[in-house]
Image 1 (cartoon, rainbow, N blue to C red):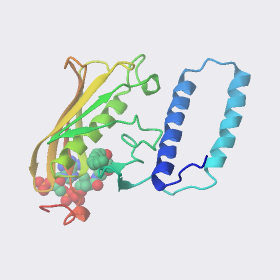
Image 2 (cartoon, rainbow, N blue to C red; image 1 turned 180 degrees about the horizontal axis):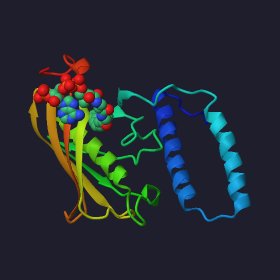
Image 3 (cartoon, helix red, strand yellow; image 1 turned 90 degrees about the horizontal axis):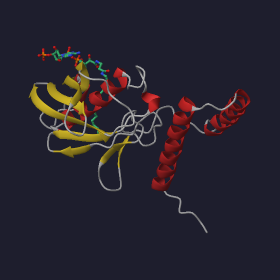
Length: 206
Ligand SMILES: CCCCCCCCCCCC(=O)SCCNC(=O)CCNC(=O)[C@H](O)C(C)(C)COP(=O)(O)OP(=O)(O)OC[C@H]1O[C@@H](n2cnc3c(N)ncnc32)[C@H](O)[C@@H]1OP(=O)(O)O
């Protein structure tokens, strides 16, 4: 049997590699195998790393348009399927609102048995930014304010939401939160997004 080789099938293979790498990272964070096994696995991984470095890019995969016509960013640290650091978050847009279901993993531990506050901030930064962009005000995060209300658990399905609230010139504002499925908020965020001067003229209304 001949495998069909297309740019999309290669990207799919890259995403599978990233997912396998996530599984590996989870296993590394939790392993209890003996030292000789740790050393053996480390040596195998070093060899695999060299195989991947045989042909390398300077930067992760950029924005592109997927076959279904949507903008995607496979190299992104939060949503990028080809980036092993990404959860990856799958964001649903509904008008000016962004929503994503998220289950953090032990790998994301900050305080004992809880998610690191910086990981929560990263997710909310992205979600607020995506809500602002959906409203027609894409920008760089200028200020992000977090209120950590309750510890964020891992291994539990949670819901992250954000909405664009207003805009003024190059600045736009968005609010968001990570909550339990029953709506109990765990972390709340407010952000100011500023469209850099260099982006002016590239977006409608600028
Ligand atoms: C798949 C699809 C996904 C698509 C959606 C993707 C979503 C991605 C979301 C993740 C986004 C990120 O992580 S971005 C990465 C983290 N952020 C950064 O690296 C930003 C680094 N900082 C910068 O590049 C710059 O400082 C900027 C762009 C923020 C501002 O520079 P500037 O453009 O020269 O700003 P400047 O002229 O001085 O000011 C313009 C106006 O903004 C205000 N302003 C300036 N800086 C700030 C600030 N930090 N916080 C608040 N407000 C500020 C000023 O008071 C002024 O208001 P007034 O006088 O007009 O009233």
